[in-house]
Image (tube, rainbow, N blue to C red; front, side, top):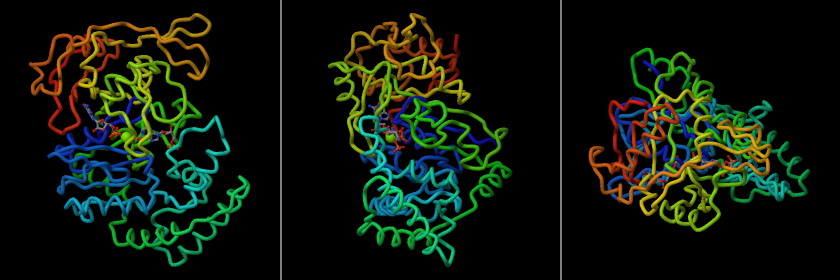
Length: 428
Ligand code: GDP
Ligand code: IMO
Ligand code: MG
């Protein structure tokens, strides 16, 4: 058996949580492989909305094992609150949740470091979620970080103090003092709670499951354009958000990768700083923001909105080896007579290209649009692919032809049920 992977193709918030929840019943295991509480994955069913940050989106299915993999950076405080919220809604995740002993620990001081380092960047700030992601990955790569398995050691407190000492010096370098207040006690209480859960060698768990013919779905976080290598650097997150991240973040060999679901919105959004060629700074952007309820699931910040961008989608598809596309939120575009699709960029040199230049930050990259007729039908009311309006089918066929990958799922609303599966799609 293989590991299937679901990856965001834009700047995050494509709707990964929803689709993982929809696909989950056909899998035995759902696993997160990178990122941490910077993620906010929304699921809606039976009239209730749930937002998950670190817990995989298969958690609402008690028969599915959910794994927080070694590539994740885990904040015990946020995690404990997430578990409590699930408990309040009648979901006991203690039995079907497994946490890698190799996952990195986010300390309260990492969050403070995130804050002071962002402040120091001034106008050039990344727009981080301030959840301590960057500083925790820095410590991991710097080989000084703490991992979940360390909380089982007798000298955990001493190891913590040693790392805190380093952080104190760095915070002082930024002209601040390290004061953690109640956060420190909350951290140790949350660590005590974490010790009571299933802390595992998840690489063995996953590879044994593969040997035994189990089906595994790896749930990406963030999006390909936020990848630390290939994203719009430096305005990116600090992990490998691509398929490659699932290999290192779970301990899965490349030859075990199966389907790659590439998920994108029928338009495009971004939250935080950084280039966004098709961004709409006018009332059209505002209309999309309101219709799509485009406000961050983690920070509540308004998301920047724009038209769909094919050069960047082609790039993400190439980097991830996408085999199936999932198109989300087309219902948001109901009120538009004309839908624009960016097919190429005009570079400052005058060159027209459908490839991403080294830096999208360069002044004067101009999107070239093709206009397609809108469908003017509320897609959310549609329950079968056969009933989809012609103009919408043409929009999908156009994207498939350009991207050379079939759209196998079209999502037309936030609810689990508003999901249309397209069988036997042929790409021309
Ligand atoms: P994720 O981070 O990729 O899991 O995405 P988020 O949960 O951050 O953001 C996606 C938002 O769009 C959430 O509020 C979802 O409930 C919502 N959503 C998902 N699919 C659809 C859809 O097809 N139509 C509409 N209108 N909303 C959707
Ligand atoms: P999901 O999984 C959208 C963005 C932040 C910021 C940059 C760096 O819900 O799609 P970080 O906190 O990682 O240092 O922030 O990345 N960002 C996201 N944007 N969705 C996410 O996750 C994101 N996770 C990080 O806004 O621009
Ligand atoms: Mg999100």
